[in-house]
Length: 136
Image 1 (spheres, one colour):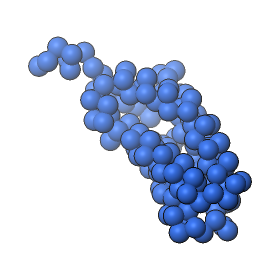
Image 2: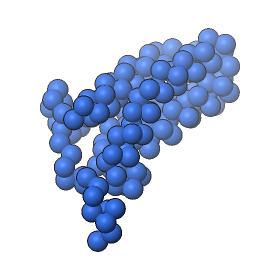
Image 3: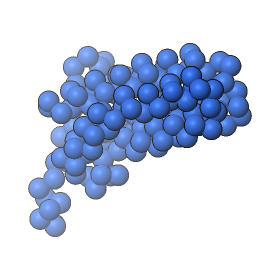
């Protein structure tokens, strides 16, 4: 076995954090995301910290585009967050941003305020979870 690979923490070491009653409640799926980080838990944690610190900027970009009623900027901001959320297997966040991207692409901004609020809440949940992972 490759020495670098042997030193990496594997998915079998992943344990649920307190406050989540089941795997379905967890806001991101580390096990399915880890291969995108070369199965390197330390690298995943490092990138997770970066993602967590960037989440407020992603949300601000979405809110600013909405305030300007700029459908294209809103679509781009939603697309960017969706891609990053998908990389981390943050399924709910990725799905919500996909909906926002679709609505923006169609120029339908009339009812996206509630969707943006849902994205913001889910981003906070993901950020809290990533913060807990950093402590573990």
